[in-house]
Length: 229
Ligand code: TZP
Ligand code: MG
Image (cartoon, rainbow, N blue to C red; front, side, top):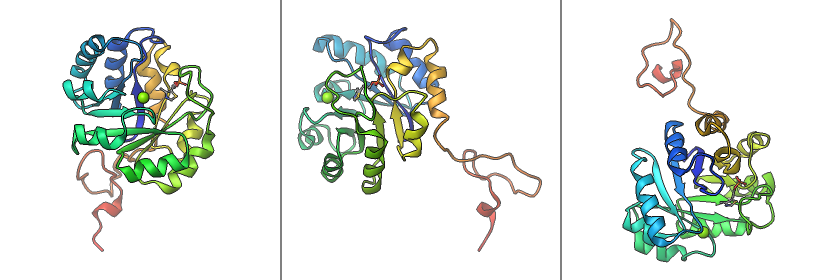
């Protein structure tokens, strides 16, 4: 799991969730999380079903609601510390599904990894207006501390924008989410691409005359790849 992690927000969205998810998929995000805090179960299910269909090669996760993830079916869920306890969610969803957990401290991060979480949402990094009960910001230091001890991917969230995202990436975050900074904008795809561009990817330099043929597009084509020991 790497790069920009997309979360829907119908209250903040300028263009609506369908348009936002289409743009996020077009921008090549790996994960879409459907998050909607105040809709009926029927509304949640109906909207999630529409959005799910837009995600062919993109992981589609549902926030909070294991029942909706199961019914769709989605690729997994994202759970907070106050949601269904992890082990019960795993039992219901099975090993094949992705379960992400929100953590606010190093202790919670260790616990979540030990429990078997597939990735962590570290929250909030900075002050945010988007989630009223997000708690005190952990700052860049929280990302660094957690990255030092866990092996699973770490997704940073809360108050991230283009002014501070590079620091988040430098701190070691595998991914990040910036909700208001993206869905309030005029061009959601272009905004997401700016964040995607902050993450180091495989370098694919143009082949030089002395390089051999590329084995597979997307892999580094440095000479070492073709050298025998
Ligand atoms: N979880 C932790 S902070 C947050 C969520 C959903 C909101 C992040 O929104 P923003 O606008 O990127 O600060
Ligand atoms: Mg939750």
